[in-house]
Amino acid sequence: MDLKIEANMATEMLKGKAVAKITRRRCEEVCVEFVDGSKLYVNGREDGVRLLIQAPNHE
Image (cartoon, rainbow, N blue to C red; front, side, top):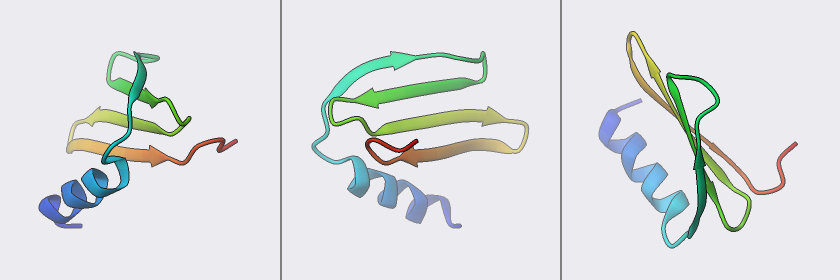
């Protein structure tokens, strides 16, 4: 996926959300948890950065 398109999609999905906390489970991962329960995972990899957005109350 084009990086600009991916960034725009992430922006739209997370726009207006309030951050509850930021955690680190692994040295290469940052998790931004939002008040509504959704999460943004940012994972550093050898080939770049991976973004994963998890919907609220996802098990």
